[in-house]
Length: 245
Ligand SMILES: Nc1ncnc2c1ncn2[C@@H]1O[C@H](COP(=O)(O)OP(=O)(O)OP(=O)(O)O)[C@@H](O)[C@H]1O
Ligand SMILES: [Mg+2]
Image 1 (cartoon, rainbow, N blue to C red):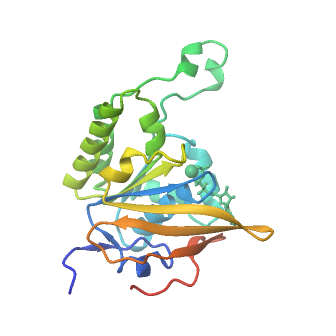
Image 2 (spheres, rainbow, N blue to C red):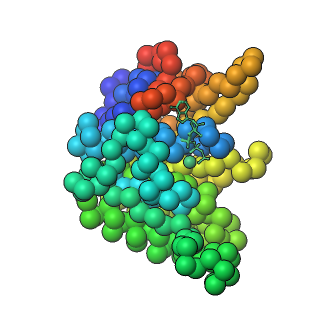
């Protein structure tokens, strides 16, 4: 049976071939994993390749690392984000709940309590950023930190649902990065989004092996295998991907 949806190539070597050629345009997917598993790298590679190779502008929202640090780390992979930012192909937004500057240390202890940004404000900030550069792709790094700001689970779930709905209405293809916090608790974004990709690292003899698994991808034929991945000098790639099932 032929597919009728528009495919968005991730630009991550090997990934598109195990998900029938690309992500569904306008859908939100979650990329989940423990620290150092490659979430940020995958998200930035999706935006960088999108802007550079497929002429699809992208927005990156950080709630954890600062932007200069991220841009510097990317140079290791040969990705020049400054160039794309200057051409309005990429917009990088610092939406961390609190930011500590040199001058404020020791003066204002409210910084350490953090500030809560209502979900709808953040959604508006994201949508106005998308409009500014006519973005087609967005990455939120991470959705977990965003959720941690709120005590009320129902509010969080509704806010998340509203955000995903708004992104879909704008037709942008989104990757929500999700941190593994508690082993047994499945976070709400896994249910709300149309896909989940899990990144892992495990011990293999005296070394660590990273892997990727497509856990769900609504309306897309995908591989059910656990694929070894590698982080090398040009970013993340899937090793020996099998062609589409
Ligand atoms: N060139 C490289 N070769 C091999 N490994 C690398 C290379 N560059 C980075 N790494 C590894 O990949 C990790 C980067 O992963 P990344 O920051 O994408 O993970 P993450 O899942 O976002 O982690 P966190 O939860 O801490 O934000 C680094 O911590 C490092 O261990
Ligand atoms: Mg990260």
